[in-house]
Image (cartoon, rainbow, N blue to C red; front, side, top):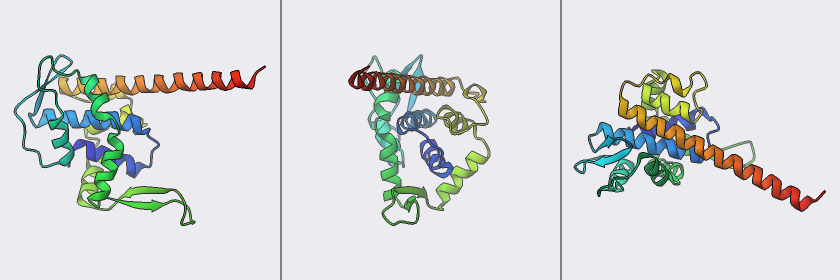
Length: 199
């Protein structure tokens, strides 16, 4: 399993309300951290420098590696998060449903209730749960950034790798930027509604 899949499964398991955009940014960050760990990329300042194309047995990691910018000046981490993160939560959900890792779960007693999904009890789910129970630093730091771990703040992440810390910080900044955009839209929509309502 990858950090991104573990993070997605934990988000489903906790039934914690996490915005799709926030989670997508965190999933993109998790993929980048795993690519760094696999030696597929290095980070130079805030740029992602690809290495030799790796052999990856995970479909999403393969897609992520294939999408790397391979010409200088290389892509900035922040730009990668926004580009790779676009609709990534939906892609993970579809992929895990297809692989039998998620199953539909209808809410309420009525059969026409809104359809949700939940993780199936598989080795992958148990592995993700074990990492979560152990508070594995990278998983815990990314979960904290998107508000899945109320017991700790992002500042408490015990990350002993400077590059990983850089990626987690970039995810945090992107999530904060997304929240600022949401708030601005809410204010603009409220102002527009008031304008139409009149005095």
